[in-house]
Amino acid sequence: MPCYNEEKNLPRVVDSLADDYMMQNGEILVIDGNSEDKTVEVAKAFIDKGYPLVIVENKQRIQSHGLNLGIQAARGEFVVRVDAHSIYPKSYVKRMVELLETTGAANVGGVMLPVGETPVQQSIALAMQHPTGVGDARFHLGNFSGYVDTVYLGAFRKSIFEKVGMYEPSMATNEDAELNIRLLKAGEKIFLDSSIKVQYFPRESFKKFAVQYFKYGKGRAYTTLKHRRFTSFRQIVPPLFIIGLTGSIILGFFYPVFFLFGLLYLLGILGVSLSSWLGRNISLKLRLLTAWAFICMHISWGTGFLRNFLVLFFTPRFRGEGKK
Image 1 (cartoon, one colour):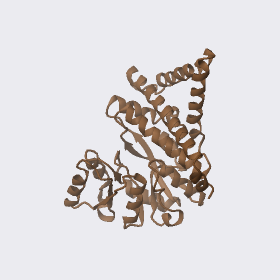
Image 2 (cartoon, helix red, strand yellow):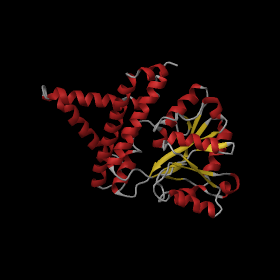
Image 3 (cartoon, one colour):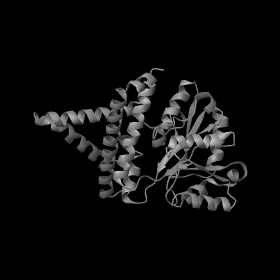
């Protein structure tokens, strides 16, 4: 569990993981990125209570580097990645191990189920479960079980990292997707069990949400250039949308008809937000907030992708790396 300043979330996360199976068979490795709050003190309190918890220091504060430290420190045969912003269902680790043993997959996982505690979080949660926000990402939509291209978080046999390598240590985001591409290239499989739903708590503000998705876009650009491939159509749409939107705004000053592109987009987003989730008691305010969440996702991810794609594409060293 890589984490940074998670003193509020850590207790409920650890309690959701530390069932009888884990207490008897496992260990929980908290990879702390030099937290400035009481995260380490909270973790030490669990150790004092007899929990099988280990604290690993991550001086670089990069999540992928922290994951590698955790994998290296882990003593067990199986490695289950967990996030400090999530709550895990009953027997989560046990079910991950069972999936690894029964499916033949190298990586297994469940569905991300966003749960909002405030109106902003609730709107982000709705956007993160809708095709308008996440495209065909099955671990978001939760409507499929079977072999896929990625899962939420993931669980592995520790030995698989000897075959395909560790997480890309320099990547601040998208390190999971990059690893999954290497797994698939090596002939391995990834399995999603949609009956396993992990509660995830979104960012508390649209600003933090936009920054998060901007970083996601940047990470995906690195992965796309490194492996010279898109793994899904959903990854192409946001950057194409940003190109189209930018072009329409520029051309609109000369030919106003091009402003229709942005207007039609806004009307489409509003239409989706007002017409979706029929039968659920969702207020008009929450629907409008969800429309804004969709816009934040599209613009932030697409802009982050294009920005990093262009920067990396014209970096000779990176281009050389991508051809290896």
